[in-house]
Image 1: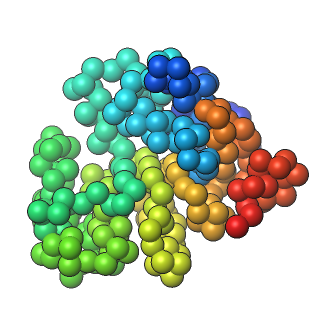
Image 2: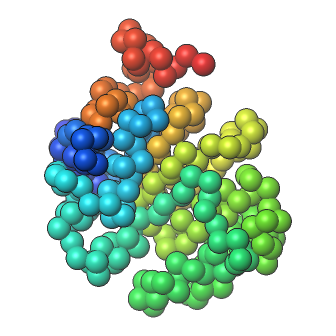
Image 3: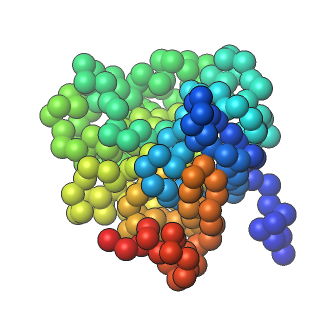
Amino acid sequence: METAEKRVPVLEIKNLTKSFGDNHVLKGFNLQLFEGENLTIMGKSGSGKSVMVKCLVGLMKPDGGTITIRGNDITTMGQKELDILRTELGFLFQGSALYDSMTVRENLEFPLRRHKDKIKDFTGTEVLVKEALENVGLAKTIDLMPSELSGGMQRRVALARALILKPKILMYDEPTTGLDPITAKEIIELLRTIQVQYKTSSIIITHDVDCARVISNRMILLVDGKNYVEGTYKELLNSEDPQVQAFFKN
């Protein structure tokens, strides 16, 4: 039987470093994401989570280390190559980040227009938009404006936009932040459904311990720019380390 050690990661970060002057934010961060896995990253504000994500999606250049996605090191890529690879990634921004001046339909069409080459073999833009909205339970919102939607509905539309190009890797930045407990639970369950339906591998950045409990296959605790500890939710929950325990005490 194939062991976890022999699996080839779909995404791997090795010894990632990033500083801003004398502020050393990432100090050798490492990560492996495997096929079909939900990997949760937790850490206090200022621990380096946001900087890591920006490096991961190519919005920021790391000072050192490598980021390999499906065998391609994005730290050595040109802009054109990076844009092509980004179609394999879906990203749910914290706060949804929908375009206020566009309808729901136009928000979902935006990445399709930007990556026209990606949809040559698809059945059509209209079909893709409706399919993505149906998969998050919001087909009837297609011609509404974001301001007409609740916070939870906006988060679902943003998830539909992240799924529109049918990426294999999804990244979620605080998917439940700002939502009431009931809506947050609905979003968590939706993320689990999406993983099965789209067969995705996912990285989830969160402060929400309940989200981590429900969705995680593995967890990484990021402290002071480095991997502090890694394991399952149960393993971290039962840890006697004071820094680890602090994340599970609310």
